[in-house]
Length: 242
Image (cartoon, rainbow, N blue to C red; front, side):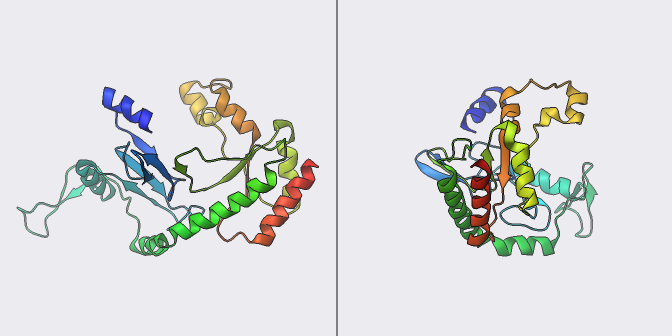
C-alpha cells in the first residue's frame, strides 16, 4: 500500500483499498501498528460484512475514508442523490445527482455493532487455530503453509495451504467424502469469462496468480471450530499425504 501511495501522489490517482478480508488486521507504519482501514495509504477502504467475514450484518459492508468530500458524496450516493439545504424549509429536498438505494438497514447495523466489541477475541481465536494448523503441517514437504510478514498482523480470514497441483483435486475429493468442506480461493479474475471477453485476457497473462491458483486450497477456519473438529481435519490431511 505504501508503494501504491507513492504512485498515487505522483500521478494523482485515487486509491480504493479492498480490505474485505482484513477487518482486525494491522501493519507497521512509522514505528507503530496501524489497523487496516485507517486509510493511511488510501482515499477509501472498503469492508465486507458477509456472513463468513469476521463480523457480519447478514450482508452489506462499509466504506471508510478520512476525506470529508468523499464521505459526503458517498452518503449522498447511497441515498438516491438527495441533499437538504439549511436555507430551505425542513421538508425540502433536492436530488443533486443520480444516486442509488444502497442503505444498510438499522437492524443489520445493530447486529454488526454488537459484534465489534468481540472482534479482537474473534481474531485471537483464529490466530490460535492457524498456529495449530501450521505446527501440524510445517514438516510435511508437500504442504506450503501461510505466514505473516514481519511488522504485520493478519486477521486470518482464510487458512490457505498450497499443495502439488497434481494432488489438489484428489485432496479436495478425499476431504469432501469425509464431510470436510474445503474451497479454492480464488480463481484468478483474468481467467473468468467476462474479463476474457471484455479485455482479451488469456491463460498465461498472469503466471504467478495462475501458479498459486493451481496449488491453493482453503481449510475450515472460523471461531466456532472446535478443537476436536480441527484435530480431525489435521489427522485426515496428514493421512492423505502419508
